Image 1 (tube, rainbow, N blue to C red):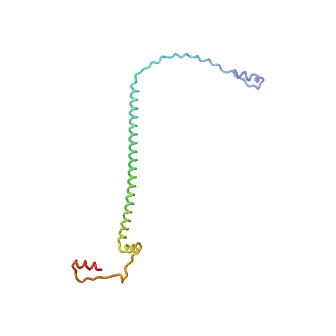
Image 2 (cartoon, helix red, strand yellow):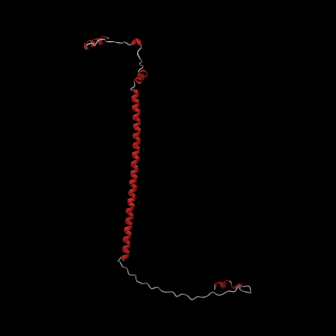
Length: 155
């Protein structure tokens, strides 16, 4: 209807479009709802109880599996930590063995007669005696011990 009112002034002449009135449909009857009283039951349906038990079992199984997997991961972490410590200790042992070998080489070279002579010359300013400083003693017979002591005191 409103459509017709708006354009009614333009509907003069032969060029104006023809307007069809809208189809009127009967109005629906408003139905008054009757509210029913809801009955509350505190008993659990057997099917619901069974489903609840099944879900509790599934959740408990999932929790146990999660805990087991967490335990496996924790044990693997501990294992890798211990193996890393073992590797560090082994490296330390190898370094110490190398140091021991170097020290042993130094000891054997320092006990050599040539290195002892060289150290005496460099550190203590010692030198080999010349020919006029050397005295040779040659004994033909074995002397008793008393006489050898006296000889040692005379020099």
